[in-house]
Length: 512
Ligand SMILES: [Zn+2]
Image (tube, rainbow, N blue to C red):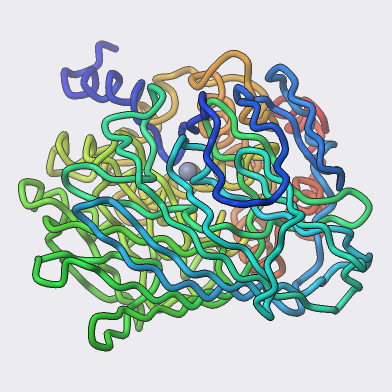
């Protein structure tokens, strides 16, 4: 079948932009550290696919290779005392500078003493962006004996932090925001500013999960895909804009309470807190039950902006019924001034490419990807996973959720979706591959997103609709706030079907 002209445009676009398949910048120059602390050599590592699970301060970069899922750590159990982040940030929008005071209260919820604390600092992957002014214990005593290697800062704990004991940190830092649009290191990334918006994603130091017997759950950045593993945590964020006289609008992971110049945000049991600022956003809103759905778009894309909002609301309503209730007070869909989409907790970015090419009907990538990103509020935010080593757990489920959206909301668009979203690419490849696929982005996307959706379709056909949807609902209920693995997915599935799924596993999975 000869694809229509619009499809050709999409195919070209899709070579550049993806549904939440972030391209990660890799620093090529050392990063300045304002501190008297001893630091590790700041050797650039070119997206090494190392999984650093040991508790030692050394890293061993290796060539990118496919990591078998057996390396995925056994997840931790539900968190008793989530990490508390209180962050005050002042943004000079037009000077692209953010000054931040951050306090972290961390409780050792694991079963073993911790010899050190790990902080992940994603902004430090960009040269000359993260300027650490001060790091101290909760009582104000400076921490001088930390070590730092690019995006990882490790603080020795003497004595070890015992199970159920807590520790507090204070950090003061500036972000000299990068301008990644249209790309950074040749790849589109959300973090930083363009002429139309500033995006603060993974913008603060945070503590990764800790796995007893294995160490901090940390992945190296890949050339594509997402590599972070987020523990559920509580956020209290205070934002002040220096440019109070301008028309700046803030989109964020949760609703704001405004007090004078300050915007106050609270977000509980979340994977992260993100925000985006623009002097050009047009805001459109609706509600689904008691949830406010907010759409932020640029004025030239009004029709697409309304469509993105509508799809997000419809998908939210549908997934509430299919998977379980969305737990937040708001969900924001933000037009991205970069050629990528990306999910975060309570907010996602949808590429301007989809807005610009929007056809006006539901058989359209804007609609499909808005449904996809909305699904990540379940398969990423509520139920998290190792995005680097087992990306199918969030990406295949979110892609398949697009199918559920079309099936239920726009059944007349379902054939289009199968034809142009999936079959056109003749997807193959192991569903349990990682982001470190040496064959490149296309092979990764086809295997994880598209073949992953075919696997879920075959699984549904095999076990039947009732067991399949009861399983998805139970999976959400059981693992909300946790980090799942494929083992947990299939162990729970066993409770809902007596069908032999071995032939399916042999067809789609390399390591099961
Ligand atoms: Zn996705």
